[in-house]
Length: 105
Picture 1: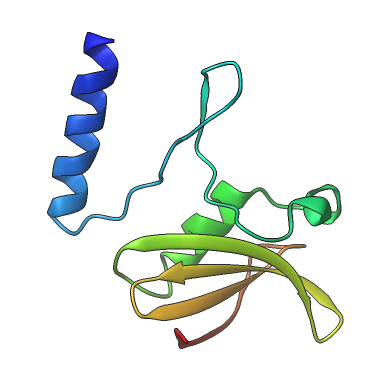
Picture 2 (picture 1 turned 90 degrees about the vertical axis):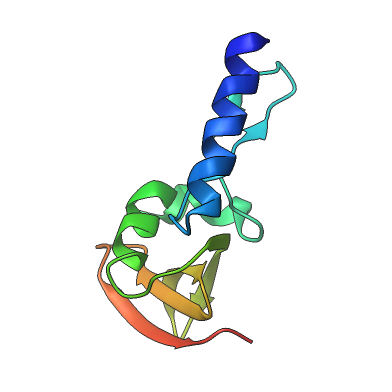
């Protein structure tokens, strides 16, 4: 538990500096995953790139705090919608290209 407490404190300190961090969700076994995926879990088998790859691509197009991530169909394409700061960054789930950036709604 001591290591976990130090890790959480370190991540909180990094986040306070405005550096984007990936949140960790506990699984039923107590292990952690680096997922922020909110909607679209059922679409994961169709994505050619991972959530983490989509986040890396999104961070090249916008800066700020990393919020939720969704996987959805948009105009006939599967895209990761990554909330970064005040922007929604859409990343093509087939190749990792940034497909668009809009103001977060």
